[in-house]
Amino acid sequence: MIKGKISLIILVSVILVFTATAFAQIIEKKPSIAGKEYVPGEIIVKFKSEVSEDAITKTNQRHRASVVYKSPVLGFRRLKIPEEKNVPEMIEFYKKDPNVEYAEPNYIAYAFWTPNDEYFRYQWHLDNSKYGGINMEKAWDVTGGPGNSGAGVIVAVVDTGVAYENYGIYAIAPDLGGTSFVIVKGSDLVDDDDHPNDDEGHGTHVTGTIAQTTNNSIGVAGVAFSCSIMPIKVLDNTGSGTYSDVAEGIRWAADNNAQVINLSLGGKFSSETLRLACEYAYKKGVVLVCAAGNDGRNGVSYPAAYDAYCIAVGATRYDETKAYYSNFGKSLDLVAPGGDLRVDQNKDGYADGVLQQTFKSGQPTNFAYYFYQGTSMAAPHVSGVAALLIST
Ligand SMILES: [Ca+2]
Ligand SMILES: [Ca+2]
Ligand SMILES: [Ca+2]
Ligand SMILES: [Ca+2]
Image (cartoon, rainbow, N blue to C red; front, side, top):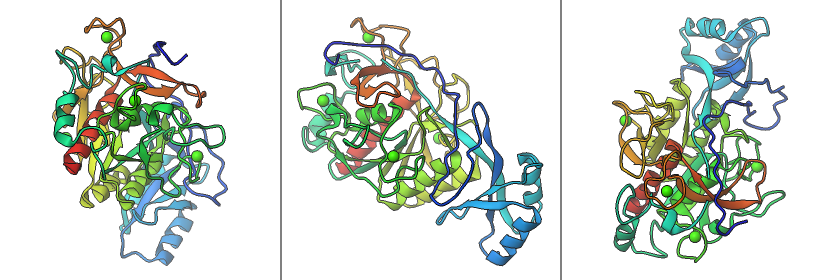
């Protein structure tokens, strides 16, 4: 199964969603948010810092809204709204209140991607004799080669989780066996536990590009293979998650000494919750690397579009032209290989995707090497290079 088998799966965009209750002890029926732009029945409100808890409670009581979650550091609250009210009208109520800093929907973020399988010589995106790669062999000579490329740097992968351990129904990806991980308590914000295991495959593939175990004679390579990966799970088994969880994931990473945060995810809506989380991490000196989005449009997704805080990464293919699906426009900062599964420009017999080890959604112990395409695959090339720069 592993050796020599290359499978191709193209996942264009993820539509199904569910909402995550961020922390325990909240008894909350999870509404379906499949195909929706934001979580129904709730809003995010941040009160001005000088407003007393008493005044906040009175305001919420007046609107018959109940607090389901309060961010301890970022200060926003997720409010459950009365059943007969809708999200836009509740936001209008709160926006009119002079005590409110901002009020907005809890938008849904989606993973960007697409899949397929094996070996360094098929990783044209890292190095090849002609086009399209990022010349890693020369770079590794500068950074210290095997054992020292990215050493001491923590890169947070805020995503679907990572196949980093043998635990319950989950297993460590064999080609992450020599990769180092930093696990933070509570870093699974979807299932509210301490084990950010991947149940989808996207975060494991992204992690492979940054730090696949390299020079171990099996599988494939990663860019900064001596760095430490901090997996933070904010996307569920359909590749979707709420902006509130993404914001908290960014904040958790920043508070736990991540130096780079890879965000191969996004949504089309701007959000104060998300923007302020990026600002928070940025002000702590964290490098935020974000996928530009796969809509093929002029204009990049959020959080990539926050020019003040984020490096927005678009995708290229083997011939060094823009991949058809990559967003572009004035907020775009860099491009990196994201692949194009419709072509075989390097004539190696396989579609030109980014090759790392992962698993198919729902089969978290069945590892193989897959070619994926997407700005989700381009961003981790940049995160890996950022880790190398920090460590050098
Ligand atoms: Ca978990
Ligand atoms: Ca390897
Ligand atoms: Ca930008
Ligand atoms: Ca090819």
